[in-house]
Length: 61
Image (tube, rainbow, N blue to C red):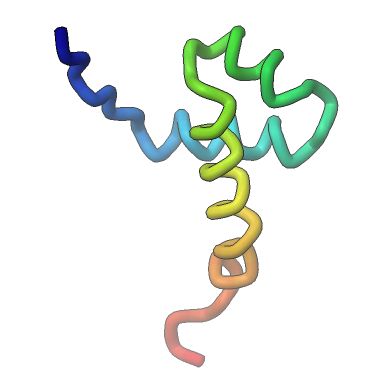
């Protein structure tokens, strides 16, 4: 039996990645609370950390 891929909103990913970056809870705790695999949270966290500086760049500079 195959499972369908879940789709998460950008807002959901951002909120979970931000929680993971704060480090107040483990990835396993966050995964359990939100029904997402810990590896997926880790990926979102890395994407947030890698793209962070670009969030504050001016489009005209």
